[in-house]
Image 1: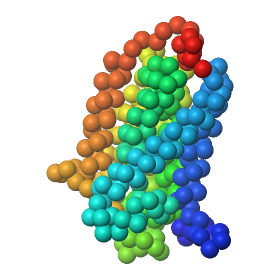
Image 2: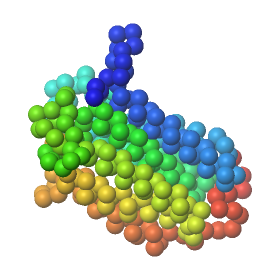
Image 3: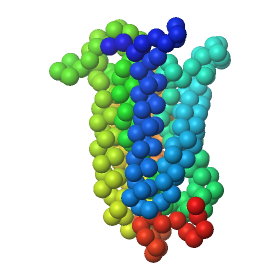
Image 4: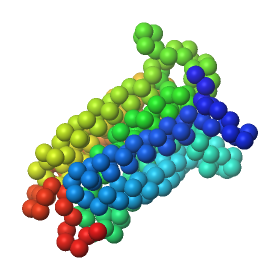
Length: 260
């Protein structure tokens, strides 16, 4: 495997950047399809995609830079080099959620209902992005002698020999989460329950996958930072599941009167 797909005018085009972009596009296509099915503004998915791309990438990169500040303080020109990898998903999720709330207020759509709509595309895009991590050789696993262990010829994982393909584990898990969210979306009885299900399913997956990660991790005592965040989000998901407001009439996803 080679992290560089090809060169364009002397500049490397990396699998990581291409698959990250493909993940965002897949999420937008999901939102557009869902909007048409539910009778929503067909531009809603594209608008959400723009804000998700901006806030998600900025948030993910910001958290990564803060987590590795000693390096970036010495090499500040590397801070914007997102095409080389280096993002923390939870950072993108947190900042993206703030952008989602702002867009919901702008569109005059109740935040819990809009969160249910928006979260359906997140695990799909995340899954495709993890394939980009695999091609990039980042977010790699611990050494393993399992039959499906993989070896990387580049990056920090090259010296470890066969390792867990944690990127593929997470990609597959995210596709499963995506299927569950799509199943629940038309069946939910409370606005916010699809978001709640995501906050319960993905953090459990991430907590367990952290046990197989071999790249440098930031720690909070015995847990990694990602595991600590996973616990907090899982608790928030359980609370949201039971406290989500009952859905009102007017169709499964109809915005309030006057909303575009």
